[in-house]
Length: 92
Image 1 (tube, one colour):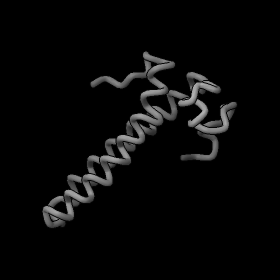
Image 2 (cartoon, rainbow, N blue to C red):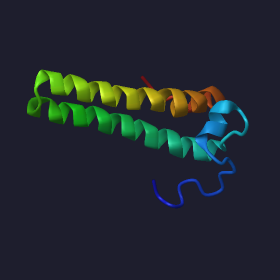
Image 3 (cartoon, one colour):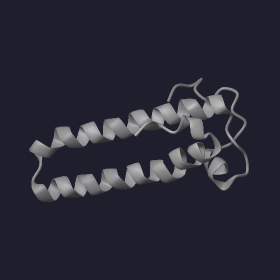
Image 4 (spheres, rainbow, N blue to C red):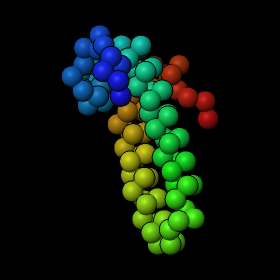
């Protein structure tokens, strides 16, 4: 994430957003949401790229690790932002 990405954001962490203590500005939330969506796509692309390189057991382990990461992003970043700014909900 670039140094200026959260310029002007008054929250100390995204945990504050999730806990409801402070709320990101819409502009900051939009930037973070876009980064989260890119990250999900990159995770998915990485899984597709490594699948032919791994045994089935290895791939399942990598998929489980990536799934935990994507789940955390959904519950810790995406869902709290969408709850506050429904218009930022990405299209399905």
